[in-house]
Length: 77
Image (cartoon, rainbow, N blue to C red; front, side, top):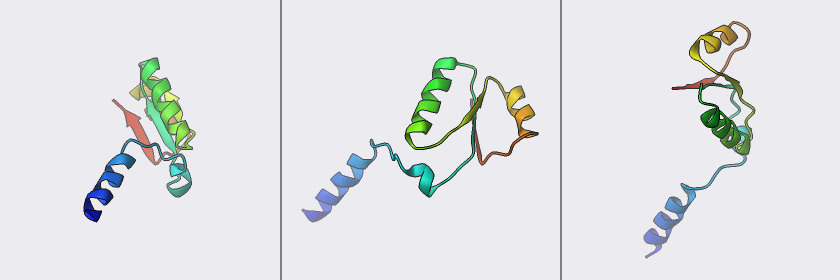
């Protein structure tokens, strides 16, 4: 019975946003996304987790900005 309760608690946490993630895992993030709706959604979700991401509209711009700054993660489609 106790094991079932623990499994249910773990499953419940999968849908939660960790608002302090950036304090535990500080990352410099670049988003390369040409669809403005997707770009805004991604930035909003990252902001909820405490991240401030840079964004560009295509891969070419992503390569250009890498000459100016370094990133831990680049999100692109």
